[in-house]
Length: 143
Image (cartoon, rainbow, N blue to C red; front, side):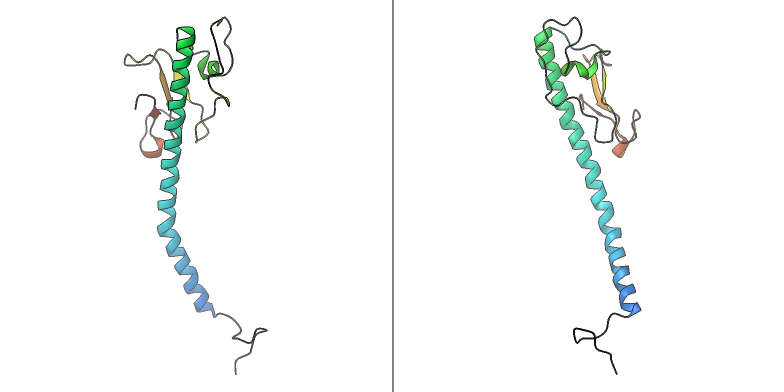
């Protein structure tokens, strides 16, 4: 004889039914999670590219106003705060300050750049170290 629950139906699920549901949920997560996390990595790379492009535009405007790019020492902060001895600065070239990259690292700005570039502006990716592959790959203004 089955015991009725408060709602008049069967009392509950058996252990086997619960285990089957847990296994199905686990299998679905195993297929969905890697796909989901790969999209997060690609999104961070796209955000980084957009931020680098915005910095490049701001650096170009700085150069138009002052006749040169900020020094390595002044860095990207020169886009927000007037550097000492810079009378032609028309700033702020970046409205909300200089953000860190999506992985929590500072953007790298060096002048002069390598390979005859006027400057190098890049993020070292997820690992925060030069070079790398996948999410650890560098994202640069010249890519």
